[in-house]
Image 1: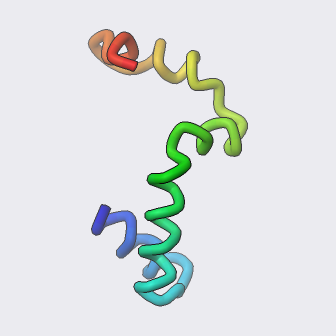
Image 2: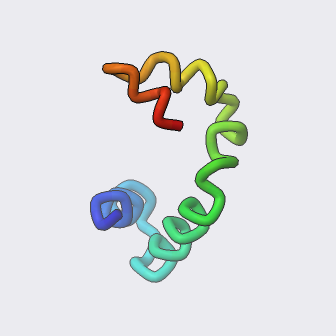
Length: 56
C-alpha cells in the first residue's frame, strides 16, 4: 500500500494524510471499484494467468 500512497502523492500532489484516506476508502470498497471503472470483473478473472481467476 505504501507504493500506492507514494504514487498518489507524486502524481496528484495530495498530502500524505489525504492519500492515506483515499487508500483506506479504496480498501473498504475494493469489490465496487471495478464497476466504477466500467470493468467486467468476470472477464478480468478469466484473463488472470495460471487459472488464478478461479480463486475469486
